[in-house]
Length: 209
Image (cartoon, rainbow, N blue to C red; front, top):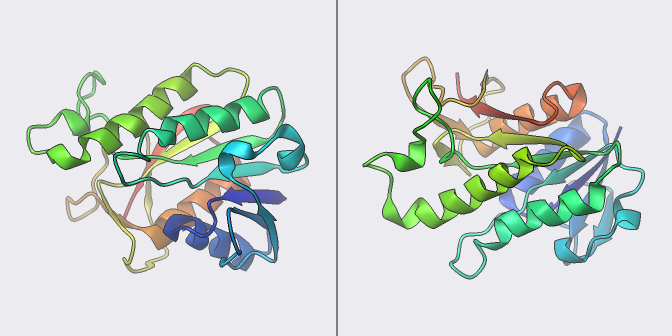
């Protein structure tokens, strides 16, 4: 299985690469500058400059693009849309590192985490950008996408427990009633989905056990 991890030098990207390499998968890091991930192969190119020829032959492309500033946050849905356009009509799967704000907190799927009164105002633009990316993905029948939402507390430096709970569209809590997952455990779930391909054109979510 051939995998391309876009933004492989980022915190999430590096852990996804490492998890995939540790499972002996064929991984290419897609980076803008020098490859700092565990991938033995690299394509040095900006995400928005990628073409169909660049991604031809990969079984799975991972969108690990992250943005945190007011200037870059709007690029989150743009990145997903560009990769969808590049992969349109192919068998290559697109697996996206998503956000938690769009997870539903009611069975009718009318209220999201980001709609809650305690959701931090500073995080609303980020949540909206991830939500926009997901809404646009749902309209794509020409791409084999999977969107993976982390838990609400997505911990970059959290421990790797090796286990997780797989959820769906609704916010799922751990056995302790918490919505927490480390980047390392998220990477395990990501690579599990890469290998299985069980959730084509679906949003799934993961939380620590």
